[in-house]
Image (cartoon, rainbow, N blue to C red; front, top):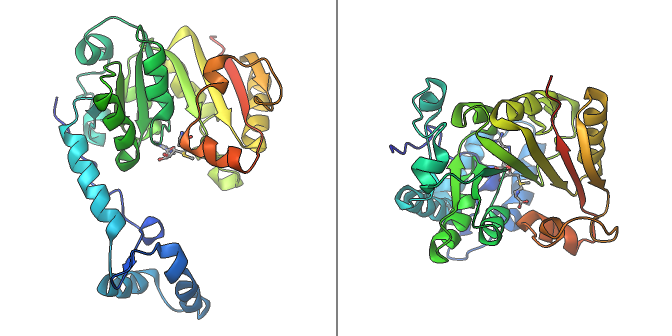
Length: 286
Ligand SMILES: C[S@@+](CC[C@H](N)C(=O)[O-])C[C@H]1O[C@@H](n2cnc3c(N)ncnc32)[C@H](O)[C@@H]1O
């Protein structure tokens, strides 16, 4: 299997880069934000100029780590990184053969979309050795954590796929997937971001293409907006809502795999005492 990195560097853009200023390792947000906004408030200081000045003064600790993780990902047998062209041109050989080629079995395939560090993928794989789990995310430096944990713990039924979820039907064949978990997706609240919301009609259409007819989708979120939007859309389009809970830790009834595993983002929201919601549903077949 050829593993090709996306042409675009993942760490492009200053917003997520942490800087070590002089010899201190200080997060970008603590030191440079005030200056950056001071410049910005002048209204003429372009972003690339800021980045140039910043790069002359500081080291990019975060990007070094990311490069190391990208390199390690390339050596991990459980990380698959097809290029966009491979996917779109139908040259991605694992499509349709995930179970027998990668996992060397015929077990059901379960996806976690937007898996971040892959906590759900790894924990579910550990619980259910008779299923194969694939965490999907575009940020390889994040799921590096999950991939490494799976390797270190001998969890051979967990893998990670680096692609844009928009291309999911190019990575999996029709009926290849049994279940999908969507864990704490960005709610994309602004109207113009609707197309990026991972439970909109277009995404559901994509999921339908790869899911078995009785395939199940799980959505866990802290976002009341995302929960309400998804429930409304599911009812409006006639999909089958199997279970919904607007506060899984206070309102009993969710299964143990819903309340017994916490992702990175979920832990952050729980610290703030935010209710976590859950929906389990099936996509209408006609
Ligand atoms: C808010 S984070 C949640 C991560 C993880 N599920 C958790 O709960 O900790 C959303 C994740 O989705 C990924 N993501 C968002 N949109 C994506 C897309 N279109 N394709 C691939 N990954 C995407 C991001 O890279 C990010 O890791």
